[in-house]
Length: 153
Image: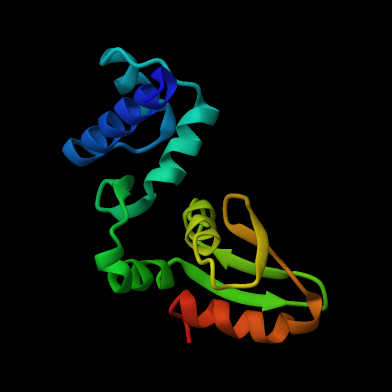
């Protein structure tokens, strides 16, 4: 095993440990906690790590916190995501998913992980996701699939 791969695995294990043990509200806080534990990481690397680990932001009484997404809790996750969605609309070229403020990025990650959808990718802001379809010819079908996957239909 290469040294780089060992570092990644060590960092991933520590990230999982930290977000399981305490409430982490944002990446800045997580970077500080990791630094205190001897791991220096950039925000870009941390974003990639969180994506690879399947970490999602879940609303709690204290605010949005990072949690590990478990495939066994797919229905629970889908139900929580459905609560974040205001609407899904599209035109001839793109699809827009509107969420409550601060929720778009987590929903976009959820969509990006759905390999059975014909999506080239997503772009997420604070409360809006642009979904780019593989083909504009099937956009109406894709809108319906997205609604079903997000649990709003």
